[in-house]
Amino acid sequence: MIRAQNLHVSFRRSFRRRRIQALQGFELEVERGDVFALLGPNGAGKSTAMYCFLGLIRPEKGSVSVLGRTPTPGSSMFQRIGYLPEEPHYHLYLTVREAVAYYGALGLDPLPQARIDDAIDRVNLGGAADLRLSKCSKGMRQKAGLAACLLRPVDLLLMDEPTRGLDPMTVSLLRSILLELNARGTTVVINSHVLSEVEAVCTRAAIIDDGRVVIQDRLDAITEVNQQRYTVDLDLEGEPPAFVDLVHRNGRSLRGEIDAADLERLVAWVGANDAMLRACAHKRVSLEQAFMTILGNQP
Amino acid sequence: MTARQFLASVHTNLVFYRRNRLLVLAGLVVLLALVISIISSGFTASDHFDLIQGLVSMIEGFTFVFTAILGLVAVSHHVRTRSVKLVLTRPFSLGGWVLSHFASAVLVVLVLHLVILIVAVILFFAWDLPFQWGLLVDIASSVLTCLTVFVFMQLLSTLVHPAVGAVIAVIFNPSSVHAMLTMIEAPRRFASSDIGAVFYQVLSWLLTGLYYLLPEYMPFGRDLQTVFATYRVTRFDLPYIVLTVLYTTLTVSLYLMLTTVVLRRKRLI
Image (cartoon, rainbow over all chains, first blue to last red; front, side, top):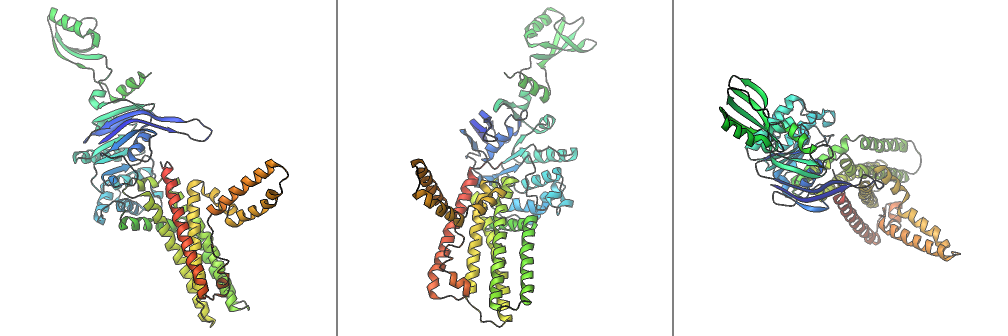
């Protein structure tokens, strides 16, 4: 769906300042049907990568392929791509209805008015449809942008910080819309800082730092990466060995944590003692913990 | 790009013009000038034909300034507010978008000149003057002038800040550059040192290049001077009218193309 290979992008904020390397050797692959998250600290290059996917930035080196083609602004491939920008960079002089209708009218096929009204209603903006975007709150503008994304079925939806500035109700609405679109076959790429949101909707993620993809994988795999700890469930009479950190105990059953290096010792200990190892799994951590661990391990 | 997409863009541009405070203000100034001119002309005892001519010429002047402001804000507003991103992430080309702005300006310029024409025709009949076809040539020439200034301002506003663009347009126009060329002609010919001669020669080349790059708003104005002064048109004026149309078509096409190229190279994020 999206393939970025060895992307290099640099900026110069003014003539006198030195160039900033926004992307350096950026590699990414998003597969069809993914709800993919681009994660990373501020200035990591997430938005720049998204602009490359949209063709708004041409990389100095490397290649991008979106839906099998090199993205070019205004090309026909955008009939199959939806985009929700980070900042409310909309046509603020238009009303919500006019803006959604305009973005819809820029598509290749005609759009019935009912579809525009349905999309506005879907994001609960029916009451403010005739309000100018300049008078709308940031959240309302984002909803208008989202409504524009709902006008036609798309293969790929790119969202830059979609939940920024949204109230919890709208975040929940956005989540349900995303999952609904994904269930209908839309691949979604989200650039976000809100890790709990990403955890709730995304299937795969990439962690970006300093213009490079540090890791990209399934979300459940990322939360296990670099975890040197195992959670073990034991059944035993006496005391567990010293290298097991007790989490809780209820009669014979206990749950503890061990270092990965102690796994073989534990198996040997269980065999030698009157004990049973009921379960053993990588210790699950939240995405936030994994994020911090992965970025903390960067040189 | 389909006709429906193009028309949707033109419609949105017209909404933008209508809701942009600067343009509304400039439009009101044009309207006010028109009203004051008509009222004041009614109380003046001078020749009616001269009054019509003065009125048309003044309103054309205001329309020229209005179109220049339109050119400065039309594209640059969307680039500066970055709303152009939302157009380019749709299947609608950058060239089509720039062209839609030009089409919108053509509509506005035509409507403004239609108003001038209607007012002038009414005054011709009200004062019982024989209608002169040269009025149409004068107004058509003003339309072409406005379109040229629109595309030039549009290009400048994509290269630099619109305010800087306005200053550049005022300082560097074919007349001022020609005046500069005339000024340096004597020092170039009679430079006392070799360095001075080289300096003036290079400056002369640069100014000559600039002279040909800048658009001429009234390319054959001197040849059509009689038409503008008397509103009388003869068959001898026809070649200059055709040449004016050709020059404007070429200039407009070139500047629209340059605007598209500049925007394509710009990071519109």
